[in-house]
Amino acid sequence: MNFDGINIPGKLVPNNYLQLGLSAQRAKQRSFKELLEKVNKKSETEQLETYRNNLFQRKLPLNGWLDEQIEELVHQLASLDSNNFPHKLGLGEREARIVCRLVARRHYNFGHGIGRSGDLLEAQPKAAGSTLLARLTDALILDFIKTVGQLPSCAGCFLVPICTGMTLSLCLQSLRKLRPRARYVLWSRIDQKSCFKAITTAGLEPVIIPCQAVQGESLHTDIESFRKRIEALGAESILCLYTTTSCFAPRNSDNIVEVAKLSKEWQIPHLVNNAYGLQAPDISRQLERAHRVGRIDYFVQSSDKNLLVPVGGAIVASFQENALQDVASSYAGRASGSQALDVFMTLLSLGSSGFQSLIKQRSYNFIYLKEKLQKFAESRGESVIDSRDNSISLAITLGTLENAGQNSDITRLGAMLHMRGVSGARVVRPGQNKTIDGHEFQGFGSHRNDLKVSYLTVAAALGTTIEEIDKFFCVLDKCWQQLSHNKIKI
Image 1 (spheres, rainbow, N blue to C red):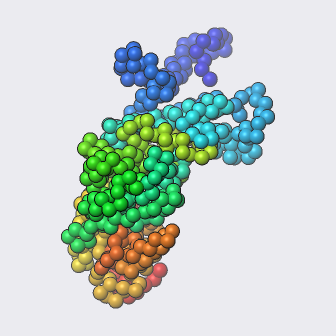
Image 2 (spheres, rainbow, N blue to C red):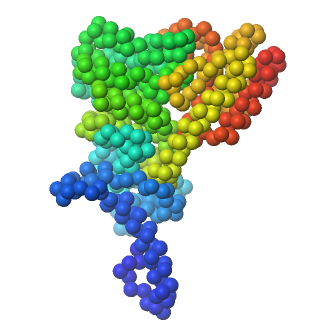
Image 3 (tube, rainbow, N blue to C red):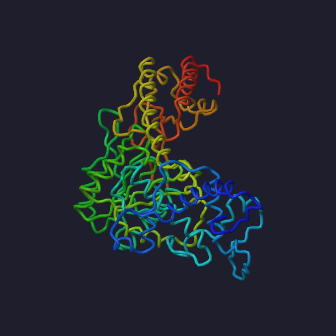
């Protein structure tokens, strides 16, 4: 409640006491007003642009808000939805009726979702609050990408309430409308199922471009193979070039700059899976450069990996804002607003300084993890595979354990680590084949057909702490010793 304009008699509370309270309330209201109204300093003509364009000038606060302040704003936004009107008379088939009070509280009484049937960016007549929440969230994400994510050329983005793989598939479906005769997707191999299934789910035919092994085990993009496949298939039959930035070592980030040049040269769309790339400044620099010298149509990132919210959302971004409408209008049905609420509250909670601190710490943690892993490897006759274009994930060879007679049991190292509280570490060994939607992958998990030495991957992702890294090496050392001496206790 805003007490400004209300004449409160001195008999109820002394005026000087009241003014102290009102002053504190006004400071909070100013934060709300800045979030909703703030625009950059521009000419009067530019400031009279449409509401939607002005909305994308909203800025992420420098410092995070208090939880109470965030909740107050969220409650005020929810009160703008028709299901929360005191005089509501809902006679439609969908009136955001929530029968369980626990569920209603969990969602702050938001129940209408976002968008309208067939368009994620369209406003809802019944849900001004939900619409405003979604628009504000997209605006804050854009500011996050431009500033914290170090992608100033990004022209627009929006949050999609489905996982990264399905969002990539949505992008492919939108490109299919623009290129109805094209059916091939040239995909630089990465052994992660959802990346590949995004192609088959869209009803398209994947053309797998194998990675190129450089100096043994490090894997890089084979640009020449991309070019040869384009020439063989014909540009008009290819829907897009599909690359990946963040990935498991020893695969490196794709050379998106050179692929972007091919995309521009042949006038073929370019889709980038940037799943957890926003937390890595070197990846952002490559995206910026690829945009300058070539072509990128969409780049897609996970909301949970980059913004530390529950799984279930992804962000579609582009260097051409008008291209986003094609993706938004490809969505069938109305969408959940839960992901927008999670992201909105998290962005306000941390602010730009909070996220910048986390990203800076992650970069330091990666160096720390790499140095400790190299020392561990050297002391045991192993090596850390040189994946210099991967600044998130690392891989250590497991050759000595295999030579000690544990080849058949080498994957038990992963199980042992997991049972001791270590999650995310992966053991990859030769000969693990897998068939996905009719396509067979040899050496699945290694991003190649001819893996020779097993390895263990670990990552320093956003939110990882130095304490976790130190404890990991204590656990790894004990598990390693047990395997080396054939004393396996899972």
